[in-house]
Amino acid sequence: MSDHDLSRHKEGQSRYYEGSDEQVLCTWFQELLGSSLDPANLQQDLRSGVLLCELANRLSPGVIKKVNRSTMPFAQRENISAFCDAARALGVKDINNFTADDLFEAKNMKQVVICLHALGQHAHLIPDYTGPCLGPPPDPSQGGGGVASTPSRKGGG
Image (cartoon, rainbow, N blue to C red; front, top):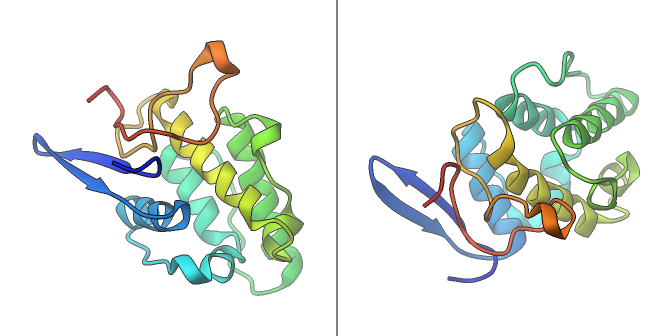
C-alpha cells in the first residue's frame, strides 16, 4: 500500500484505491458523491465550490446551509469560503485549510489537496458519518491530524 491509499469496506470486503493524492481524492469524491473527477483537472472540477459544498454536506448534513449554483465568480468564491468554514467546523486545523484564492485562482492547489486529505481523515470523528475516510483517525497527541498516511475506514479496520 502506498501512503496515499483510501480504503473502503463494503459487505465485509476491503477495497483499496492507490495513486497520487489527487487520484485518491477523485476516488473519494466518486464514492461519496458519484461525481467523476479528473486528477489532472482537479482545479477546474472543484472551482465552482459546488462539489466541495456537496462533500461537506454528505459528511455532515446541513453543515453548509446554502450552495450557490450560479456561474458568477462571487457566488463560486462564496461556495469555496463556505466549504473552508465547514472544514474548520468539522475539525480541520487552519494550518491545513486553504483560501478561496488558493482554489479559485489556482494559487495553491497543493494546499487544497492537503485540506481535503485532512478532512477525509477527520471524517472518522464526524458523528453519524459511516462512509469512507482517508487514513486513520487523527492522532490528538500530534495536533489532531493532517494529511492521511495510511488507509482505514471509520470504525476501524
